[in-house]
Image 1 (cartoon, rainbow, N blue to C red):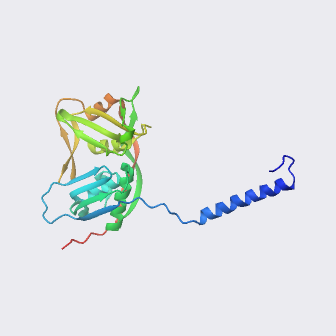
Image 2 (image 1 turned 135 degrees about the vertical axis):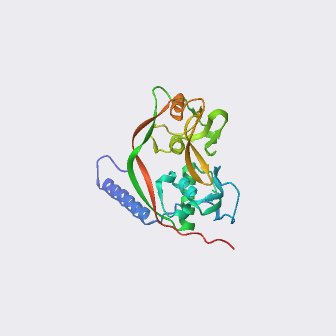
Image 3 (image 1 turned 30 degrees about the vertical axis):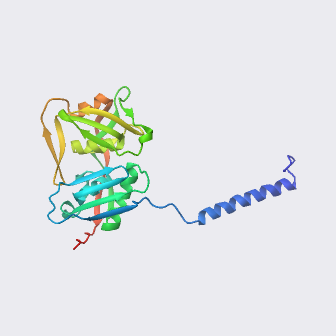
Length: 268
């Protein structure tokens, strides 16, 4: 044991300790990175059948994605969490339709699944993207006066997929919803950029109702914003009922420029 007097034995032990630390640091730097990239255990991504009349559907389910007769641009929107107007690329991404069945090998968060979906697009389409962050008019999602009226989602069910269930008279029932995903949902409802600035972590369950104002509809994979007239609050008024607010402001918006993409050959 080293004595308190700082003798030669103590100095020798100190030098040995420093040498050991240095050697461990060198070994750590030379070891290969063994962390496997996020990827699906199995993924089938292929052209939909010619003249397929099935309605297009793209769902994120627990630990997997399922897509049916879905335009390529919809996959890009979901994978990179952008609206259609934020994507610049060839016109055929709106008409090329694909089926997808992709399953993760372990419980995965929504953000992890998005990263896995990005990898599928990069591997199968050899897609190359440039991200341009542009300040533009939009909305900031913030906490209104007082405490938010949101219920924390059950932690034991943390990997259940996020969902929005639409009911009668404009009812919206949100389950396991994070604020960044809620902001993305709102951006598609009002066709304006919405950025989460609530500072709220975790996932929540909450309900609200709006039945008038701008509403986003899907027609054969194309986004269309229409005004739905009817009684009840607008989306801007409805979210204040749960203690949140949309504030008009300049917000950073990610614009995707597709610099390279290749079509998947049609299976014969």
